[in-house]
Image (tube, rainbow, N blue to C red; front, top):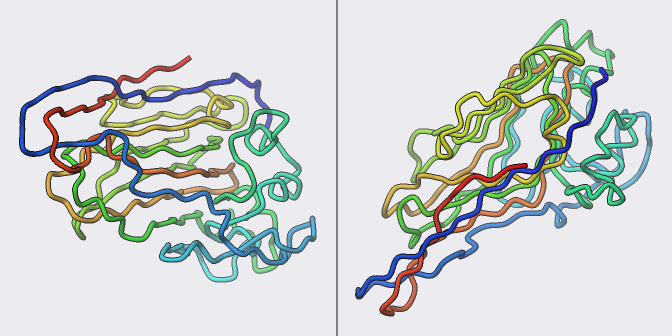
Length: 283
């Protein structure tokens, strides 16, 4: 699997000011939740070719959940679902294949230290219990604990994360959110199309009016995503789920430095209301 690299950086900035005389006041850019995975205790690798201590864990941070939706004992043990790993070790044991564009400090990689990784490519490399790719598709989700968003104004939430995605064949990815135990809503969808050098991604982000925007292989290996969320008024809790679905012997999705911000959060009453809203900028 080879392709040319085209760098891309996409981010959303949120600008605008609204001033009101009111008994209710708001603060901009209030961090409600963040996770960089550095607090996860790592242990020794299991079957991967690069043996090392303190490089891998199948246990997420406290309160998080990892789902294993694949046949038990199928494929490389480290990659049967999402894992929290030392990102430099992941790059080395997978023989790089452009992963270092996300994990290499010398490359201005955004993934530093530990991160969360789903890697169907590496999963398919161990056939101790059969050929994974021939037996099953790879499916797995990484799910946050309930996040307290009480006090956030409607449609004021923004999810930010550093992301490394490489498309191939049937491998897709999604981010969903749910509020107060309600139905999941998809806020991002990556759909892979094609294989090898012809692979590309159709990106859908509803809140940015992006509908199957075509992005070439290599353009999403090292990027920061900022996604506005249409949270309802008066919601108390939110859960975020990161999923890779329908993958075979494809590539990967790795994430790090997750942050949830409210751009309008209730604070002590004052006379002015400042709110930031979004405009997508990319180059």
